[in-house]
Image (cartoon, rainbow, N blue to C red; front, side, top):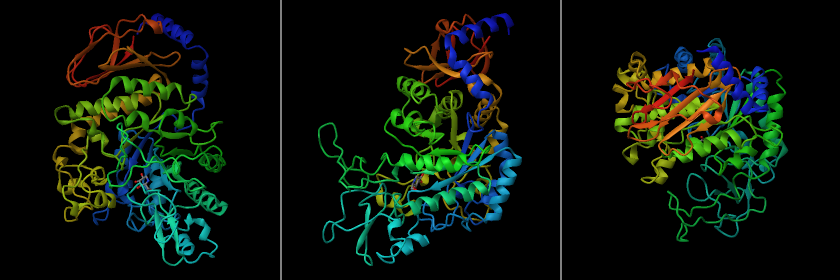
Amino acid sequence: MNSIRKKISSLLIGLAMSGCVWAQSAQQSKSPWWKGAVFYEIYPRSFQDSNNDGVGDLNGITQRLDYLKLLGVDAIWLTPIYPSPQVDFGYDISNYEDIDPQYGTLKDFDRLVTEAKKHNIRIIMDLVLNHTSDKHPWFLESRSSKTNPKHNWYVWRDGKGPGQPPNNWESYFGHSAWQYDQKTRQYYYHKFYIQQPDLNWNNPEVRKAMYDVERFWINRGVAGFRLDAITTLFEDPQMRDEGVVKDENGKPMTNAYGDPQLDDTRTNDLPQVHDVLRELREVADSYKGRDVVLIGETYLRSVDDLKKMYGAHDDELQLPMDMQIGFINKFDVAQFRQRIDEAQNNINGNEPLIVFDNHDNPRWDRYGGGKFHDDIGRVIATVLFATRGSAMFYYGDEIGMVTTPPKRKEDVKDPIGITGWPKEKGRDGERTPMQWDDGPNAGFTGPNAKPWLPIPPSYKTVNVAAEMKNPDSILNWYKQMIELRRTVPSLRYGNNIMLNTSDNHVLSWMRTAPGQAPVIVACNFTAEPQRISFDLSKQGIVAKQGKTLMKTPGMSDPASLSDVQLPPFGVYMGEVE
Ligand code: NOJ
């Protein structure tokens, strides 16, 4: 690198970006650990089984820490591992302060935390605040009589009349959200399964109990929480009906369960949730120097709603998940550009947390596949890791595991797949066991065990062992991208500026940090080769050459920045010299 040119270009960039760059560099020096971090979601049932019962467990995760270290992740989010009847595979909790025997013991958990720490990996717990299991002692008491002190811990109401629930609210998992209870002759509210009664968050005792749970796990060494269904804690106090959504012809719509499609306005994203978020944050922040992070499951309508989740004074969630970018679900350059830009500019300078898939949604292969499967994966990983923000991905994404839904109703494990079959096949397809090698049961469990979900046939070629050996594998792309984020400061902390903004085929952007070589990125969003010329003049950059950091396998180094030739779904990333 020509050092004079480098100094001039960073000076120009510095001037162009004015104060915000300097503010950013100051911020960078005292950055909390989660800023720019890479989070890896583990569905413990499906990651690694250590005792050959066909169900993954905590000791299995501990055995795989070397792999996670090699991959380069900073933290792992464990979906719920608490004691549970497992109706919703752990999201129905019957005791918040223990571990389900299927997954291990508190001792196993402590060992996981300790061993993970040695690997520089933090543990994030899933905190389910909206509801408990109907087998939780709180609910057993609550339903025992209307005068029980815990009755008011849940949302109970009288029906409108004989056999009539209080209103038209529906469960996300199909049919009425109200369940009649013979003993109390009242209905209880459940936004999810019948076996998941909603807690009453207007009750201060409920709040206190849950803040104690938060403390319990922080005291045990966790680095933060992913807050489940956090936007659904409150319901309209007047219990008004929700509206029915209409299609473009004004016809009322129906959902996959055959029920009217409701607008979700009285049971989701009510303003009262912000008080709770502040209280949860106060507890987290009371652990000085720990930087306990609160991550939100925040499916919201717009970036404006997302912005509110950080709090008016940055005193709520540090990382509400951005579902705007990763769930566009089609390769549309203009939409990606707009939403990435919004995440940079419309959330008060807060940290976006980008995510493409999880245990509730089809994997990234939903963007297309077949011939270009790995290329599409590279594009997704590049948007995820090379734009500014923290990044989260789901186990198996890094090897290109494909969504493999059950073919027959009788094989379905996720109850919504039974209620909604065949329109809604449930979430088994994205929860299949991790594919470690091409041996029996893909190395997930012992050769004679029966995995709780079948191993997808793709495991013969799509597996960790095979991909480790292949430098051009999707796994190696993930690994290298994560490594570059760690080692190239512009990529980890730099500003994010969209480039060539009228191009409808190629998404390109630049990352810049003071005193550092800018990084430019281009992703071809089409199945045809594309050619681009980076226009960096507005950024005051005169460079003609880039030093390649990453490129799609088989692609040649560009002759110059004004002629970058990208193969179908090809990616180029280079440092500006
Ligand atoms: C969101 C979780 O991700 C999902 O798996 C679960 O079924 C619901 N919340 C209810 O807890």
